[in-house]
Image (cartoon, rainbow, N blue to C red; front, side, top):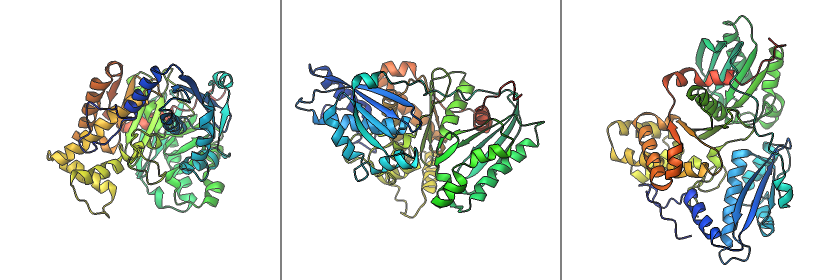
Length: 469
C-alpha cells in the first residue's frame, strides 16, 4: 500500500512501515468494500484452552485481495507469540487456509514458529486448519485468566532468575524481611545441578528468615506451562537429553522437596507487569522490557495474568518487505530488532558509531549510553528512533490488548535515553493516535519497584488456602 505516510519519521530508520498504520490503511480499503467479510482466527493451546481474534477482510475477489494474506499472516504471527497455540483455525477466509499451511509448515517461511509452537512448547504437531465461523464464534475463552498473583498473606519466598544474577526475598504478610542478589552465569553452564542447586540455595537463604514457608513464587525468562520449563535461554547449554530429564520438571521437583507448598513460576515479563500493577494499584498493564531481548507481560483489566506467552520479541511491528531480520527466527520486522540491545547495535551502525564487529552488544549499548551523557547527537538519534518506532508499535499492541498502562523498563531505557524514548513515543501517540494517547499512561518503575518489586510480585503468585495455613 502506498497511502501510509507516518507523521513522524524515525531519523535512523526512515523506511520503517508501522504495522499500526499499515493495518489502518488496510482497514480503509475494507470499509469501502461492499463484499468485505468477517474473519476469525482461533488459537488452541496444548491444554485445549483457546482464544479467538476477529478481524475484517476484503472480499476474495477484490482487486487488492493479495493484501489479505499479508494481513492475516502477520496477525497470526502476532497472535501466536502473544497468546500461544499449536492449532490455528481460520474461519471466513477459506482461500487462505492452504497458503497459510504452506507458510507455517515444517518447510515453510515460518518453520521456526511451526517447530516452537508445536513440539517445543506444546509437545504436539502444529497445524493450520479451516473452521466454520459459528464454531469459532462459540469457542470458550474462559481459561485465559489465571487466578494467580496479588496474594501477600502468610510467609512467602519470591525469587527471580536472570542472566547475570539471581534474586530472592522473604516476606511476612507482604513485608520484606530479607532480600539478596547473587551473581551467576547460567547461560554457559552444561550441568543441570548448577541451575537446580542455585534455586535451592536461594530458597534456603530466604527460609532462614521465616518461621515457616507457606508459599513459593518464581520469576524467570522463558516459556513455562504448568510450572514446567518449555523454552528458556537460561538453559541454552543443557543438552536436550538432560533438559528433558532434569530441567523440564525442576520446579515441580523443588516443590516436592519443600513439602508440596503452593509453588508457582511465571515468565519474568508477566511478573514484571504484575509488579507494576501492584505498585500502581491499577490494572490493564502491559510491561515491556528492553534488554538483551524484548520481554513482555500483561495484567488483565481484572488484575489477573494469563496463560499467554506475551513474547513480544517475536511479534511483527514493521511491515516493510525488507525489514531487519531476527537472527533466531529468520522473520523480518519483529520487535527484538527494534526494542533491545540488538536494536541499539543495529541503529548504532546507521548512526555512524563504527563499533568493531566483534564488540559484544552489551558493550555497544554501554558505549551509546556513555555518548548520550555527553549529548552526542548520534546517540540521541538512536533513542529518538527507538521511541518513534515504539510509539507506533504501542498503537499496534492496543489492537491486541486492552490497555490503560504501559510499564517501560530494561537496560536500553536507563538514563536520559529512556526519557527520550518515552517522550518520542508519547509524541507519536499524540500526533497519530490522539484517542489512545488520552487513555494510555506510560511510566517507568520507581526505586522501590526496582529494588524489591520483582521478588515481591513473584512471591505473590501462589494462593494459600485456609487448610494450608
